[in-house]
Image 1 (spheres, helix red, strand yellow):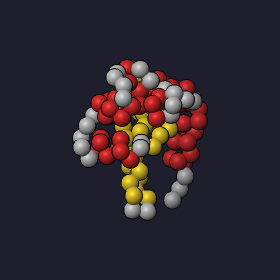
Image 2 (image 1 turned 120 degrees about the vertical axis):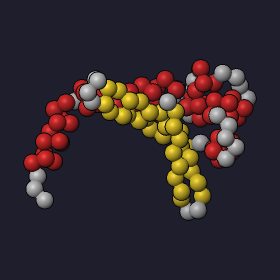
Image 3 (image 1 turned 90 degrees about the vertical axis):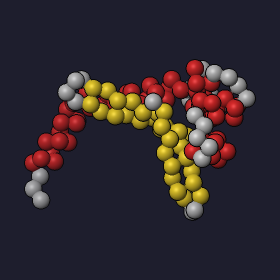
Image 4 (image 1 turned 30 degrees about the horizontal axis):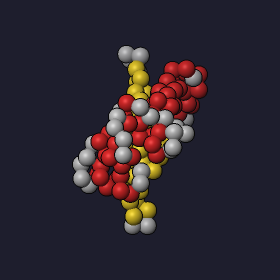
Length: 117
């Protein structure tokens, strides 16, 4: 799942590409997110204002075909320092954190429930 987020700064819009993951053990679920990479203004405008799907827009923007199935927008924007697969790998690891670090996550919940207002 690819998502974008926007940030307003000094009257100008900044848009970021993010990769998200959700994992569940059937009873509990958690989200994880990769970092974010800023979209060039022209690409952000094409997606947000003109309603063009990111996969189509990035192909046009980069002058290539099938970027989604290769390095993805992440690869194009980072000059292949971060690929689509790597961004999703980070998001999945982050989503699994509460499962593989149960002690830390339960300690936080226990501490919050034991505190008095």
